[in-house]
Amino acid sequence: MGQNPTGGLLSVQRRKEIYAICQRFDVLIVEDDPYWYLQYPSANSFSRLSDDDATTRKSSGFPFLDSLVPSYLSVDTDGRVIRLDTFSKTVAPGCRLGWVTAQPKVIERILRITESSTQQPSGFVQAMVAELIVGPQGSEDDGRGGNKDGSGWKADGWVRWLEGLRTQYEKRMNTMCDILEEGRDVLRMGRRGSLSALTLDDEVDSRRESDEWAVIETSRMYDFVR
Ligand SMILES: Cc1ncc(COP(=O)(O)O)c(C=O)c1O
Image 1 (cartoon, rainbow, N blue to C red):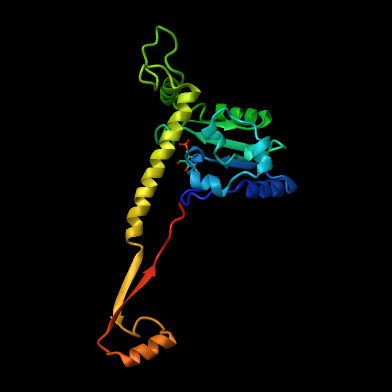
Image 2 (tube, rainbow, N blue to C red):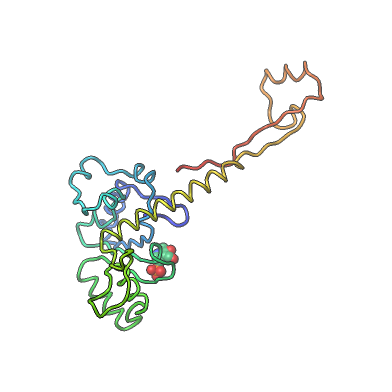
């Protein structure tokens, strides 16, 4: 959904069309979507749900999550979507800890493969993320969760964190775009007629005016959609 590196998003309509093709040819969809939580509001408005979809969609209970363009899971009627999520982009890079959402038969196969290969993600990272989100386990546990008082974030805090993170990234993106926009025009300077094709009016002008006249031409190199 959040294409790397373009940041492009597939609209719900486009996703439905792709899903229909996968149904026709019996193809599974692996939705590897680590940036889902970091969608910018501008992307949401581009990929907005139709009014019908928006009213039938089940709420997550979190307005922030509901505002994001929904996953392929939301259009999956056959159990052909395998969704991969990760903490790597939202807690710490290199966490290498995530979760899979899919129909039970697929999950059972993945479990068997995992048992005979990687076995499980790093135990240290599991403990760290569990403490951050769930918080210390009982009075004997002297660990600290993500909240200031040492309790765990729980689902509310996790979603609040994601929303704040998205805002931070958006601010950085806007700062970067502002800086790049300052240099997006290339200026060329020269004698009239030496830069680009002249219009008829320009030709008349240039014949009338001195050869000493110099012109400055501006070419825009790029634009951003924010
Ligand atoms: C497309 C994609 N999927 C998933 C991940 C995250 O993977 P992991 O959870 O193994 O760190 C990344 C990050 O590098 C990625 O670029």
